[in-house]
Image (cartoon, rainbow, N blue to C red; front, side, top):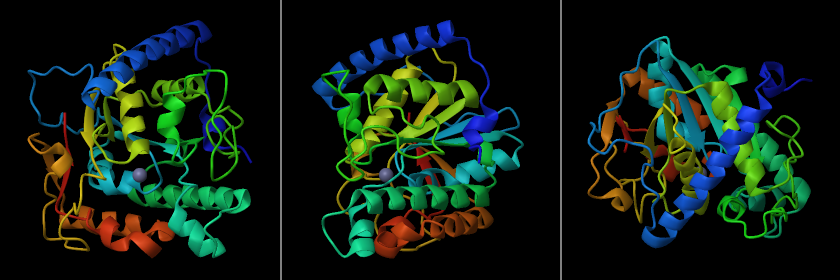
Length: 319
Ligand SMILES: [Zn+2]
């Protein structure tokens, strides 16, 4: 069966894409240097003098949510996705990995601490299906759901590859190329150049006006890598606005753990000192966020207290 990605594929000028990817390469190299020195790439391309507020969310909004793993898209952004769609705007989601290295899920599925490649790939496919259901529940169209299929737990090492011809190999799936047939580019080797090109292809198709990406100060390396990848694209003369969110925001955060739907989300310790724009969710938006989160069955089995602590009256976005 044709994947959503294949159904919507349209020709893009190869020369223009090559130029764009080359610029992304150069920018990413500069970001990596900045990251090495100060631990954050910052919001490249943003105007530091402009407001922290979110841009207007209306029929002209084209939102792209960048999720390192299936479930992140709900934790950060289920409320804002509903708000944009209700206003008549468009929403796309891109998952950089398929979450095939979730060790607790593999432990439960196999009763072993040494996952087989089959179990890991089965988990990845299952988590992709969960993410499709979760975002469909919010109103995201199947053709706006993009999976890149890069290796869970190794995204930063792909992005920082020294030998650019030697693909990374996933510890979990044993794959050295995208193993999922319904990903954007099945068979693409786990090379930095391919990751950058695949992400650029999603930007071409989504044509976003607003991109929400993980903070480069998140404690999870895959999240930092996804933030760096997006920051590099933002610095490439893009006209979209960029905001960051955070999931792994420091010890004990969010506090208190568990479902407390009447409480706002507090600023994460890792972003202390930064002033976020807070989107206040309606009770209906919050209820639907909870329903969407429950679609991530494999994760809710083990991480429910942590995951539920993101179902709050607010979602926070940082410049
Ligand atoms: Zn994640």
